[in-house]
Image 1 (cartoon, rainbow, N blue to C red):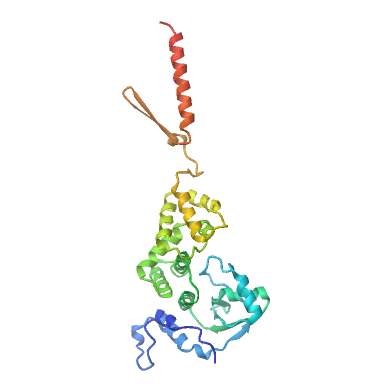
Image 2 (tube, rainbow, N blue to C red; image 1 turned 30 degrees about the vertical axis):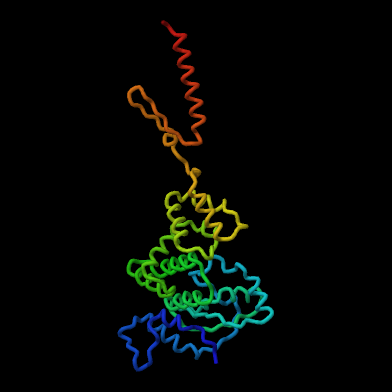
Length: 307
């Protein structure tokens, strides 16, 4: 008998606890959720099979910043004990095989040059994303930013028009089993922080929304500087410390390399006989020296001139 590839969490995400055939009220269930429920109820009829990992493509929506991170341990485990848990694969409309969940097991089998044990199911895009989100939440401990990127991926793939965006947001909160209001906030954070900065920081496990939202606000103020910071973060420190470093670097007054018009760096004002000069901090010593030199020259010329 095939291993159950879904747990109760997926059934709950796709609706309430699956009812009996007699109680199933299709009118109260959306077509997408109804199909997903049917797939869950039929799961035991699908036996696992061995498939060439090269024949299985990755899905467009990733749930890890770097799926290969720490893969060596999994490779060693599969090499020694074999692949105990099958991956879930779906057949797309064009006939291709696409991973739903189990990317790391798929990558490990590719690295080992062996076939991957998989369960193949017929699933729509929506059903596959719900299954991917629920399974990953149950099997691993995705960080806040990885969950936010997953939300963004769902909205990007399924919400390309105003008409489909609402449905994409619904799929996202069902897949992650989060409050619907949090979906929009997570999407703003994940899209507002440059991807190169997110990759430089990494998952930062254990850090919640508040710190990432603080970083997002700082990035909003100076996107150019935020991209520069990505190359300044040390890679030999833990993820949470990298995130803290990014916040610190963006909080400082270091100017970005974005071109600034000279008139914006030195501003001169006059009120009566009083002249004020406002300059950037890094220019202050040179401006002061130049002003003193100019004043001295003006006074000297005044003494040498006609009386």
